[in-house]
Amino acid sequence: MPLRLNPTFRDALAAASRPLAGIWVCSGSPLAAEICAGSGLDWTLIDMEHSSHSLDSVLAQLQAVAAYPITPVVRVPIGDVVVIKQVLDLGAQNILVPMVSSVTDAERAVSAVRYPPRGIRGVGSALARSARWNRVDGYLDDADRHVSLFVQIETADGVEAAAEIAAVDGVDGVFVGPSDLAASMGLLGQQTHPEVRAAVLRAFDAVRATGNPVGVNAFDPDVADGYLAAGASFVLVGADVALLARGSEALAARFVTDA
Image 1: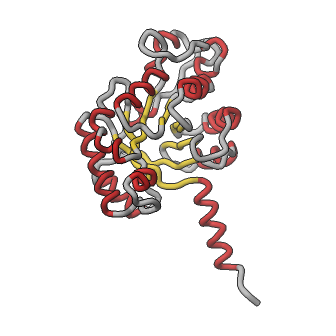
Image 2: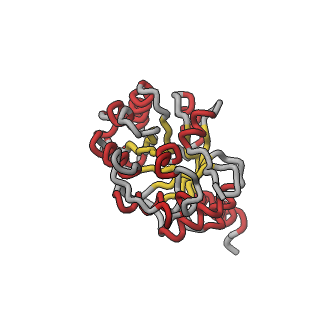
């Protein structure tokens, strides 16, 4: 029987009347992903770049969150056409490609998520969860509607090219990464440094001028509020592993005492 896919993150942003708040899932645990999915947050980022996520664990997490009113985005570890193809075929509808610093990087990412003749995505819909094993009518002809692509600007070069990157046809939004941006500016570990925050805001202005949404990572609530006030349309405000780390530390501080 014919099946329908969920709206993309692009669609969710377009329909939203407020910025969308999300959480990283870095643990690789489908159970953690499901807990986060039921939190009331708007979106979750399944992160393959800085975690132990495998294709199997990404699939399990996509399945775990599917029953909840949250939009999953998968960050691939690299803008590689094979990796992107595999993640799309798992059924990921929303892809975030890291370390996009030029128009060329962005165009490669767009090509990787589109079928020929508009791109180079390999065709395997009959074998894959993406089209629910060909149970989604017209998936091949309509695949662009079912997939959204976001690119991550996280270098000084990327900030300078932000307007051109955001204007690439097929890029649905830009996510700014202050941590790597700080490192590229010679300010490793200082993502809230005034120069880094100024660079983030320059990227915001450049992306928003193209009409595309812009988002950012900000675990500090005050910093997140500042970026929201500056026009961020989506933010990541926490991570499963960070919540567990800080929560367990708080318990230790409260209950572990010297005799």
